[in-house]
Amino acid sequence: MSERILMKFIVGQRVVKQGEDSRFEGQVVAAFVMRDLKTLRYVVEDDGGVLHIASERQLQLAMPTRTPNAT
Image (cartoon, rainbow, N blue to C red; front, side, top):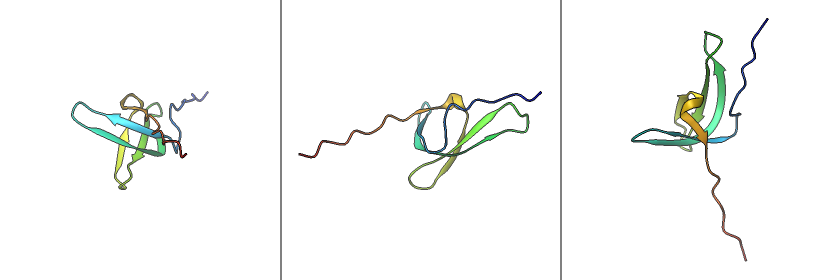
């Protein structure tokens, strides 16, 4: 019987990887399961094209930026 892995984030979502001294914001571009078939990792790309690999624990959804109303 195979186990199912539920993804907290999906490709296309904007997320933040917040460290003690750093912050990395970008878009989830891929997700994969490690060779142990239990650990899920996300690939996040920032606006400059830099890629980071992160676990679910390291990520949170980015707050959407609010655009001012055009009047």
